[in-house]
Image (cartoon, rainbow, N blue to C red; front, side, top):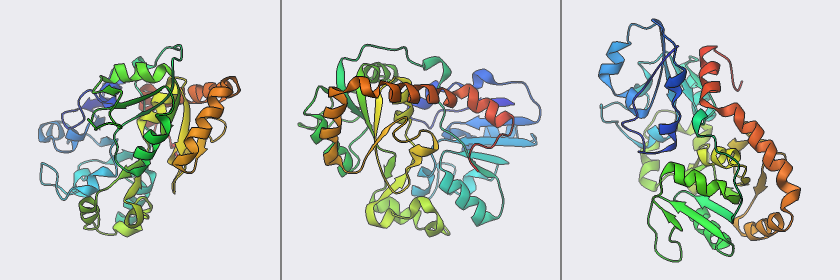
Amino acid sequence: MLVIKDMGGDTPDGVNDYLKIERHSEQSDTDVLMYGINTTINSSIQNEYKHFESRKLLNLWQPCEFVFEKDPAGQNAFEQTLYFTKIYSICPYTAKWLNTLFGDDRHEAIFYPFGDDIIPQRQEKIYDVCYFGGLHGIDHVQCLDQIRNFNYRFISQQRYPDPYAPTDYNVSFKEKLDIVGKTKISVCYNLLHFRPDQQVVVKMHEGWDTNEAFAYMDDSGRVPQFKQRVHESAFNRTLILCKRDHWNIIEDYYTPYEDFIYFNENYELEGLIKDVLNNYKDYEGMIENAYNKSLNYTSKNLYEHIKNNKKWKQ
């Protein structure tokens, strides 16, 4: 299977830059896998491979495309995938919804991969707890209110005023991995926060309310999406504290209380963190379990999975 990427539309120096799935590419005249947002609009790439019998897309952003009326090529979210014969999606709910909506099986759930050559080495833990990402909702603000009581790191590409200023602002992806690797605990949320104007656009799409991913959007603006920071924590042997939600998509990858710990409300974080820090050795088996499981989710494994037409989730 041939692999083609175009990362022009993706976040610069983001996690997807380091997947390098194309390293595993094999020559083919019939089977191609494309990844990177721009592959859905790059007409020159699509024209070059339009004669291939199998034209696959790795969609690592779903369901984000549904907050836009049109992409830069003038396509809506449904039209973006018409070129492809198979679409592998990190959102199992949206994949199921689209198959039902259009009466086919082109969409299939797949795991979010992690680059083979950026798997971190074990490091000494010098920080207590970290959160990395933006402050996109009240969850994230309340998280910082809790973890600031410890030797914490808040890693973000955005500036925020005190007392929510990042301890590590606009660091490179590899610098971020290094900081996480030096931290004992990582707080993770697997949610998107759609603004009211974005929710309006989602509702313009046919049958939107039959997609389980959008089931609670009116109540909270929240939509499920597996976040790579979970993998980044697991690969770094950093204990994952994950917020329980309506979907708990993390359980497609990791097992609660074997590989990670749930919390239900943000105010629980301080007590959980204290317990982990006071009894850290008791959690080392869980940390190692998550690390070992994370090795299933490498770019090479994803390539082999797709090439061999293996089902990930039924």
